[in-house]
Amino acid sequence: MENQVIEQENVCLFCGNDLQSLSKPNEMVCVFCDKKELAKEICVENHYVCDECKHLDAKQIVKTICLKSKATDPIALAMEIMASPAIKMHGPEHHFITPAVLLTVLANLTNDREGLEAKIELAENIAMQSAPTCSWHLGTCGAALGASIFLIVWKGLDPKEQTSWDEGNLILGKSLQRIAQLGSPRCCKRDTYIAIEETVEFLRENYNIKLNTTEAKCNFSLRNRSCKREDCIFFNLKFALV
Image 1 (spheres, helix red, strand yellow):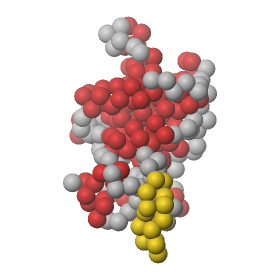
Image 2 (tube, one colour; image 1 turned 60 degrees about the horizontal axis):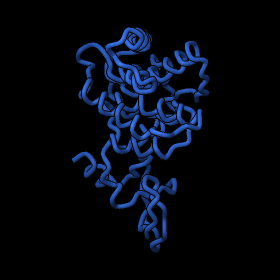
Image 3 (tube, helix red, strand yellow; image 1 turned 60 degrees about the vertical axis):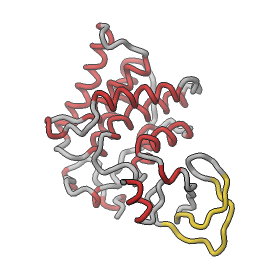
């Protein structure tokens, strides 16, 4: 149902911008699957999504973008994924975005993408089983849980082992502490940025892995009725998309 609404709104499933009709069909490459076909419309940013990929759901969008991406900047990759209108303003897909993005950029940084798809799918399974719905009404955020899921999948940890338990809780605790200091309920975008930033710092301090990150700027302020606006560190109205 959600994707049907997206199609009716006549926006690009990749970036959310308006679609425009072409004066005559032109061969284009789908931004998701690389299929070539005659396109009757593209978005204003020249993206084309084939008829088959128009039906991708949120989790499929996350996996597809990550598996095609060569990015080593986790914030930039998260922003690219969250720009898709398939990704709701608030939703449990953010619990999966955090580990998927981090697994992807580390694979690209080390030039070792072997097994990446299996790792992303494992992260998806853990995220959807452990936090299948938003948990803001419980006073916490599943986007932070994604940081711990990343660590478990990346290191192949067994959660029953002491090391896994220690590190998983440490990285989760750091993310939740900063969310508590900077946040309020109902902003999955902000909490995803925070969880990623805290994980980047954790990797630098504990594994000497240095990931360069774009400064996180929120594009979603005008779409979020719960936005704290000037009280949020990521708020900047000039970046907001209508």
